[in-house]
Image 1 (cartoon, rainbow, N blue to C red):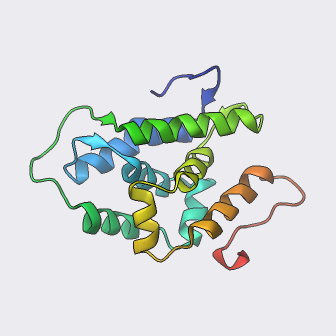
Image 2 (spheres, rainbow, N blue to C red):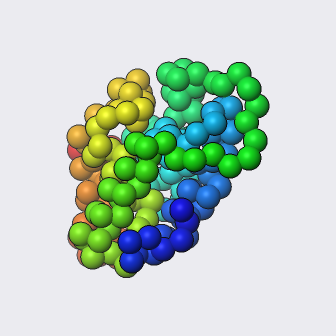
Length: 164
């Protein structure tokens, strides 16, 4: 899951999210699977660029963790070992890969994963955004801006939820 897929590399930040952060979030909640909510939680840990966008919209790790716990609850049995991605989480990762390839990126980043999580508009992430009163259209616009105007581009700027 953390190697090159479909002829494109996964960035170091995305590898860390998939191999460590999302599974740890699932274990912390005693969930025996890695779903889209755990992927979103993993992305809140990133320093660039998906994490800051999430934070600009009030989606900090603590806030998202609380929303996940409040929405689907905490498992009753302690979970150890490796967990698998849910079918929706796998589909979301496939969409991230396709988007990176479509845009000509050399690797899939956390930003591509965030794009696919927000674009999918189903599953748990949609519920978290609604629970936290985040406008998914505005979040998607911010992610698209970051994807299409990468850091270092003369047209790029720090993204804030007030920009939308």
